[in-house]
Image 1 (cartoon, rainbow, N blue to C red):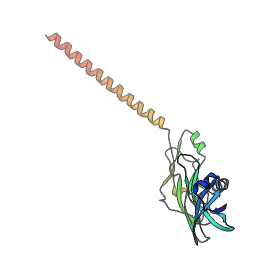
Image 2: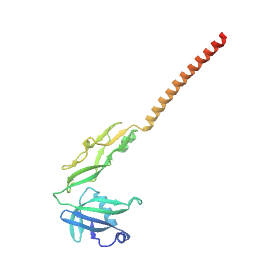
Image 3: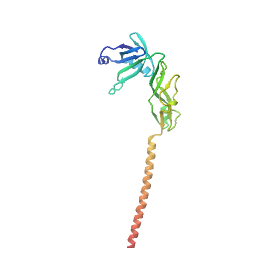
Image 4: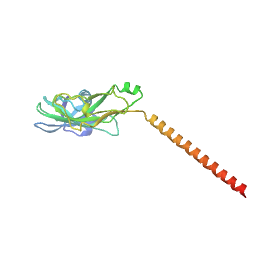
Length: 215
């Protein structure tokens, strides 16, 4: 990604379809920068927020990764600002790595509901060893089963920073079935109550007739 030092207003930068940012980190002072919108999109689509890449600033190459990306909450997909963190080969990176669910369609085709509980997993790893996502395969799961952090296939040198028993993805039976069961139980209760009420009414009517005969 080719960067330029920024020495003008944010509005001027954005009016030219460029994105303002800042670069900082190992042996480098915080420096305002800007980049062409297309170059930014191409880079973040290739490396995400957890992989390092080379960025050129005034002819000097830096190993960096996206530390933070700010987007406009009112305009989906519009990037307002970004932070690049410079690293060296001996550093480690801490990042939220996205989780990708494999074979979700096959499981849902069996009538089950697949729910991704943890969208990302906070992980520490060496520079240059980043991955775009953790893949979790739910193909072998049945209803009411889970996969946790302990089930993740961690590359060498990776360390997860959340508890191993944290649930990543779960499967369950459709809510409709549970609602039908509840409705059936409620209908049975109503039927029992109706029969009970009918018996009480008949008993009261019989007692009333007996009192009438005695008079």
